[in-house]
Each structure stands twice: as C-alpha cells, then as structure tokens.
Figure 1 (cartoon, helix red, strand yellow):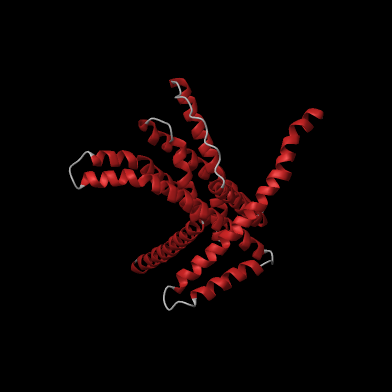
Figure 2 (spheres, one colour):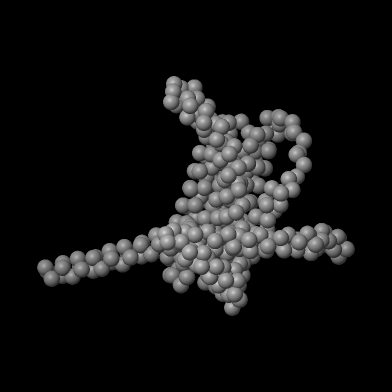
Length: 321
C-alpha cells in the first residue's frame, strides 16, 4: 500500500515537473513573441487614441472598452483558430504571410513619414454632431478601429506563430491566447490612461500643492507625449516591418542584407568598452528601419501605379460582364 502511494506521489511529482516545464516554455515563447511584436503594439497604442477625439469625456472609456472587446474577439474567435489551421494544414504559408504583413507595416510607416515631411492641408472644422449623428459616428469609429486592429492583430498572431516553431498544437494555442490577451490588455489599458491623462491632470490641478503643479505639468506634457508616441510608433513599424522582410528573405536563401546589418551592428558595438550590445542593437534596428522605409516607398509606388488602378477597374469589369 505504502509503495503504491509512493509510486503515485512520484507520478504526481513527474506530472508537476512536466507541467512546470511546459508553463515555463509558454512564458518564454510568449515573452519572445511579445518582444518581436513590440513595434506593432506601440503603433497600436499610438493610433487608437485618435478614435475618441471629438467625443464627450464620459464616452471615451466606453468607446475604448468596445474597441478592446472587438480586438479580443478578433484574436480569439477568428485569428487564433485561423493561425492554428494554417500551421497544421499549410505551415509553408506562414512566412509569405509574415512578409506581406511586413510590407504592410513598411507601407504604413512610409505613409506616416511622408505626412511628417509633407503634411496634408488642414481639414475644415466639422460641425458638432446631433445626438443621433453622435451615436452613428461612435459606431462608425468603433468599427473602423476594430478593422484596423484586425490587420495589426493578424500580424501579431503571425509573428507569434513563427516564434513557437514546432511546439504542440495545445502549446501553440496557449501561447497565441496568452500573447493576444496580454497585448490587448497592455495596449488598451495604456490607451485608456493616455486618453484620461488630461482629466487626471485637471483634477490634480484643483488640489493643493504639490498635486496642483503635478496636474498642470501633466496637462502640458500630454501633447508632447502623444507626439512622441506617434513618432516612436512610426519608427517601430519601419524597424519591425523591415526586419520581418529581411528575415523572410534570409529564410528563402537571400540572407545578404540581414547578414550585413548584423555585421555592421556588431562592428559598431565592438567600438565601445561598455554598452556595446545596446549600440549594436540600435544600429541594426536603425538600418532595418531604413530598409523598411525603402520597402515602404516601393510598396507605395506599387499601390499607386499598379494595385490602385487595377482595383478601380474591377467595378467596370464586373459591369461589362
């Protein structure tokens, strides 16, 4: 009886060790995937606040909550099963999808850089919407934000899937769910803080010193914070998009550009007695970002002169048939 109990305890201990190791693997893979998706996360956090501009303060958090819920549905109900299906049925398709997603990030990043250099003419001020119009506008903004989030979430899921490698189906599903939920909470929690920072600053400014000074400083700093976040998001998109494409090309045997960037970064890092690793990463990320900018410019020309005209002709072709 005692020996049977000891054997059972040994089995339980072995199962616990396996479970612990499996959990540790999930945490490591989730952290690695989250790090690779950092650029998309930053851009998502930088872009989302614009969807609540113009709405009453009491509608800001409900709108963000609805976008966050739509993002969660996108990831768990559509993208996660789709990613698992692709990894099972057509694993060869993951890298081409990653490259396409990287090209999209480069295209978006190039567009934002172009807007910084050549800003568009300011739009005419819109009239204040009526009650019914405000509700319709809110639904429209939420739907638009969720569509944008779907594209970014698809790229996050593809990056995550490429990180888990040959893991079991259950482990892949767990990592995808952990990364998806973790990024959603991080992004929209940060967005909520950014959006309400002005209100927090105003409330603090009404209190006694030193809180009043902190509140006024917070209100003054928010435009700078939003501008800095937008710039960081743009740079991150170019860095991540360029890095994804260079890595994808290396996977298909065209590793010259990726190898050169690593070599230049390593050479730059070796010049410092300390902090060389950080400098090597900064140089490599900057070069990947420049590559992403060039790729984005090429994709922009392709969209303007090839894809755009083809899409414009499709309705007339359908009518002709």
